[in-house]
Image (cartoon, rainbow over the protein chains, first blue to last red):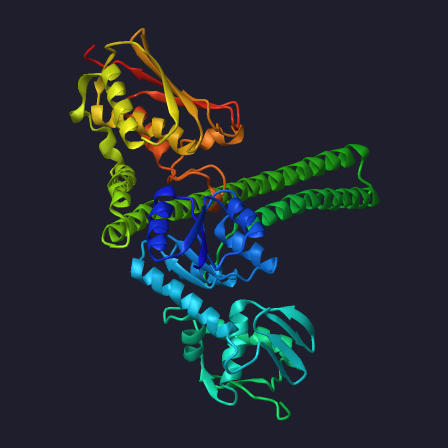
Length: 233
Length: 325
């Protein structure tokens, strides 16, 4: 049974959501503020965190940033009333995996949760690639999210790992920004394809010898990106 | 891009102007001193008598004083203008921030109960949920609907701000009885709240006013105590008395209180204490503002005291009995 943490200050809303999630065979733990969320995340592991943004003591964005900085890679789904594009970006940049605005359709929420678990299992599955992948003197581990390149060792976010894995799985092929958005973020209404560009820029800084002259993660002008597998790999 | 004046930039210009003014006065003083010296020197060379030189010195000194004074007055006006622009910009920024906070709060306050009702209705339609659990759902939906209704009413109340003072709806009514009715309503909708009520209410205190509005003001003040003390055990104190045709209504609690620095803003529109994202209680910053507007429209006053955080709060409403008593 998957274990979910629900951090939400509104008692009625939290009760309603807990009822629905339990009927779908999820185990749900509920906390009412950001501090309680941080405390429980220190002690227990969860398969998914459902995080409200406007919460007493510590807001959801700060909770997400803090757990990410501590190396916690549990997927985060923001549940919030704020629906402006900048706010969605803020949540995703903080390390959130998905975002749903209140009031939402119950089936849509359940589909998003399934989507997160599906993408997560794809990331950690070892069908086409083993957990650790080596290329051109670089290493990436799709389970621990650790990466090593010419500029050092880094801890990647789940999304960054997913982008690498998707590009590597499609090595040599041109992958459009829309394909990446669909595969990694899982839905079409993600704010902007510019976000993909920012992810690629960060990956180049980690893996390329000269990020300004990329040879591994190439830009295909007007279309998207291509991972060029090294000859000796 | 249009030129945008920012408070910080204006403040920097203001500081620059002050320094410029001081430097200018010093510079003019030195310059005029030199001009006077030169004139006296030329007069001496031309063989002017000491009386004439004295007169020239006095005339030039007086001119110097006049020029410097005019300069100072001009710059003071300029500084006053800049200071006023700066204050206006700061005020505008505060207002914009309050409005943004209000938008965030009202979005949260309207959407969360809606989302909750939506989930409860879906729960009722879910066969996997046991019947006994479904029995508890309807009162929760009712609570959310009440919360939604209150928020919509508050927003509409502010929107038709002037409607609050319509004298045509004024009537003579028993305020003591109205208070009891509001306590009953409060008990009904905050059934889960942990509070006790300590009442000291003089019987049959009548007032001439708008019964609905005054009832709403009482609700808003009482709800303020419950909303900000959710999860705590509190005692709400209500006292009503009549003396010399002035009605005194005190409503307070021994709960979380308010920081003394925030007391003066508590009745401002959209004002909510602390940062919006991590506020421990729900609300939109409209409740006490509406309460104050209602009391003021009845030619009454409302004031608040609190000894600080965790030290409770006390609202004092003073109302005239009205012309028919």
